[in-house]
Image (tube, rainbow, N blue to C red; front, side, top):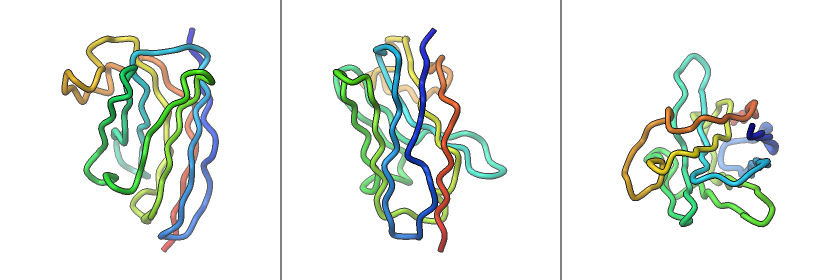
Length: 125
């Protein structure tokens, strides 16, 4: 049973920055950040695989950076130039499916079988 614990959320004004952290209890083929805005469905934000290949949602490209420290089993999401539309609960997720690797070109949250409890990010205008 993999456990994921997020931290680093909070409130910030538009244009500000936040860094999210996810502590994992084990390695995975892929790690990802997802978010669920108020009243909307969960969506993918960024993903990184065990080859350190990354992919991002178009809405965050150039503003967010996903990275990982394998020695610490920690996943990060650096969020810069935050916008009010980035307001959401952010979730860390882990995948043990080889098909999650960026090279396969999939964009399927169902590939991720383990999820954290979420951390709130609120961006005010």
